[in-house]
Amino acid sequence: MKNINLFKKVVFVAAIFAGAVLFTTSESAAQSAPKQEKLLNGLKVLLWSDPKADKVTVRLRIHSGSAFDPQGKEGVMQLLADNIFPNEAAREFFVEDLGGSLEIITGYDYIQINASSKAGEAYLTMLETLATAVANPTIDKETTAKLKTALLAKLKTMEADPAYVADRAVGRRLLGTFPYGRPILGTSTSVQTIDFADLIDAKQRFLAADNATITVSGNFDRAQGYKAIRRYFGSWLKSDKRVPSSFTQPEIPPTALMTVASPKPDVAALRFAMRGVARNSKDLAASMVFSNILETRLKARVPVAHANDVFVQNDPHAQPGTIVIGFAAGKNEVGSSNGKVEANDLIAKALAEPVTEAEFQAARSTVSAEWAKRDLEQFWLDLDTYKLTSVDADRTMFDKLSFDEVRSYAEKARTSPLVSVLVNTPAN
Image (tube, rainbow, N blue to C red; front, side):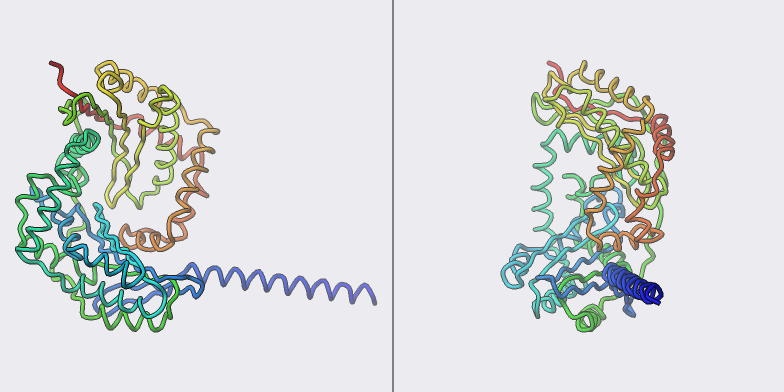
């Protein structure tokens, strides 16, 4: 009889424990999955409420970026983004009055506004301010002229940097006029050709409710927040023009070294580049791990003093992106003729060597840890921008990545066309 009672107690405790685990798991899942809504104008809304947070954060993403700049007028989407909050007073308002911050990011695939406020009624003011800015931006000749002047001043500084010149040159060499080969900010020449009518056209095509997703997270009442979004963003118009969804892929690039004059004497930069994968590619995880392995190999094979001058940057986009290998040094080091030969030999050997199990494990651990640092909201926004399968699959893509997948990708990379650009001071 005692044994029966003991058995009942064990079963009872086990049931309670299982229930607690189930409740915790369900609660965790509820916190990671947002409340999803969609307004009549097509705006997608994602809400996470956290009573323990000390602020409210809003991310508003427009799912079109500089890839849609008209050829010859690169910089249109950057100026459109600048026009949403065209003066410093707006940023000061978010900091001083709302106790938060404001940031606008322009990339090839999207424009994103990141804003925050202190908890409480301030977040309602933040939502109203954001809605007014994106639904009814003031686009006129005077504002456009001021924004162009500011952008041209920024470009003047950037175009005097050999590293920036190298990055832009290798992009053109690899991709030609394909959107990712053109600069996000435009050039000093292209920005000059842009007028306010170009911004109005871009606004009508891209700055539209049905081309956007908004996330709200932090300490706010979810029902009140959704009601406020409907009130403030409900009048934001849909786009009346169809946005193209694809681009003609670039031709096979020339692989002979291209030399570009350095804007600074005795400062050189060397770049190599190959095509990467798309953000929604099944090979994304393998390409990121491979890029880390390649960078680790190269850093280990240059003099210690120059290890920080070597990088491998993997940029996936809506269309297949790029993998750029960079070196930077003085005129008589890697930027010299001999340096170029040495760098080329280093890369050839690094690409040719088979990936080892130890390299795979170390790189996967490093890349996976960095990937896990991304905000949850970013994964959900990427779901819409890049038409991903699911957020869960995207967040955990390194968990199922195999050694063979990385070795297979490394073999593809080894046979991909590799372009090279040397930015250097011409010999006298």
